Amino acid sequence: MGTVALSIDAELAWGYHDLASLPEKRIEKARPSWRKLVELLDEFEIPATWAVVGHLSLDHCDGNHEDHPNPKNWFRRDPGGDVKTNKDWFGPDLIELVQDAQVDHEIGSHTFSHVLCGAEDVTEEIVNAELKRSKDLAKEKGIELNSFVFPRGSVGHRRSLRLPRNRSRARPPRRRPLGDSGVSRPRLPQTRPSGPTRVLGLIAQRRTCLRPLEGHTRPGRYLRPSSPPSTARKYRPTETTGQSTPNRSSPSTIASPHWLM
Image 1 (cartoon, rainbow, N blue to C red):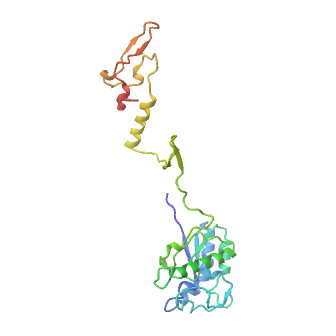
Image 2: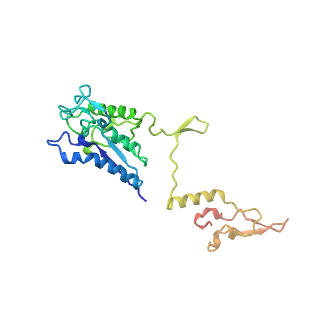
């Protein structure tokens, strides 16, 4: 059974601010659609990852962001103000709505201002500033960002996406000593073989562990009924007990793995 991941780009007007013209009707429906979507996900108990533009976390701003690296004229359409005067550019109330939902949603990053990471005029410095600003704003609201969605699918500067400090990368392979020589080697991952490889491994294992019982008179316990008589152990009675013991001069049945039980 497969797994479906539901990701929602939560951006309001920031998803279109760099276009030639703003889709006014679509932006007007963004807020009520956000609320309706939260209700539907609660009704059907479906968790989702909300990729939120970091600027929506602000309560207010001046609209300039002079201390924030950005492409040329990137914030020219930012009206500034607050959520009461420009509700399409701010959304702290909507973020709280997702946090207080009955379903355990995840809130991820969609950059701070919907910067297209793969654009030619977007440098690594800009991407780092976008990620850092988003992370700081999320931390103020008690949100830990573990997911990131590239705005408009524009991929770039992947090196800026680092693991959080509380998550370590894959551990290097453990090393163990080999004998008394002091030489060590990495511990290889243990995988279970299948098919012919597993069959041959089982045969080799049985060759080392199967031995005829002393005084046993039933060679059929170790040989299949169809085993050739020339390779079966020959038994002769002992002089003291009258029991049979295997003749060590006879060919060994262990030499033919495909005849083992």
